[in-house]
Image 1: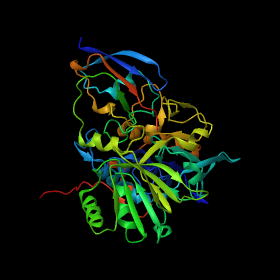
Image 2: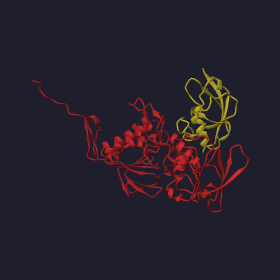
Image 3: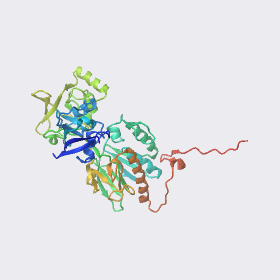
Image 4: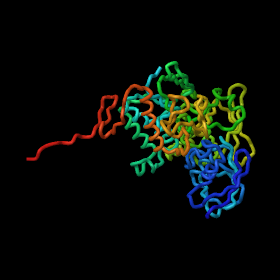
Length: 109
Length: 352
């Protein structure tokens, strides 16, 4: 098994602790969708191209995350409700060193 | 009143391919789309991105796929109502439907196929107090008629192509153009970024970055905006006549949600065992907008759904007619414009 544990607070404030596979080329947005933690059609609208910001989340733990690409950075510059710890879920790939990651989904906008 | 056989709502890849399949059955189509151009997400969100899972295309740019579909459907002369959103649907006594757009354009057809993708693209609105109060009173989310801004003081917010392009365009029309963006960097075509730089140097565009518009000021109409520069405490008050917020578009299911269709997971439930018809006979839903057990939002699935929908629509329109599907290789493609494509005939000739 190459699952890691991730804590996700949904848009209603409910905390979910979920298993995320690291060997399926999945990102955080897809993990949220696979557990249906946000209604379909409100998250991952662009499919993971960093072009819609519907998967914006706030990173609560101090994990070392992959650096932001220019695309992600530019998209967050146009999104709403952006905080210093905002990231796009679709750009965070599940890797073993993200075990214990804690995130909160940003409001739908 | 626009009359057609199949009224397609949504001019993305699925809706466009439905035109072709309907055309093979001699059915005419008309498409409505809220966007000003055909292609849906492929044109609006990612025209320059490659797609790798269109059967027969190892790699195709989304924009090229749309161009190919337009070419493929051309002979069937589809009608388009673009830049208008399908708002209401009324069932007629004979079972046909009248669909009216937000601009009042009426369409009449015996069959309606909703190929609406994720919904119609609506402008993303900034989170500001009093925003709705100033809508149409100084605040806008898209530019319909640039002349409105002649000799006006305009502030534009946003960091993408539309913010850049309109700043450039209005620099010659408005008396004053200010562009506000949260970053120093812009996400636009290099050419546009360079043009804005030149206009800024020439004093024709007033650039305020990194900054954000945090307030709207005015009695009944907008007279000023409050701008906060990142990392600074002071709020700048800028006198303006117009504020144009260009933060891109996001899809919303919109008025279709109120048409009495069964909705699940922000999508329309259909009968996938048969023909992708909804709970209302005569209304179908195909492509990303529908849902059924095992649904995948893939363009190739939309093509399949469009094909079966057309066969069912044909039976509904002509219940007394008998028909069997014919391969295009056998039957060719006869357009409504008089063109005919067909496989070359085999030459039978004796060799002496």
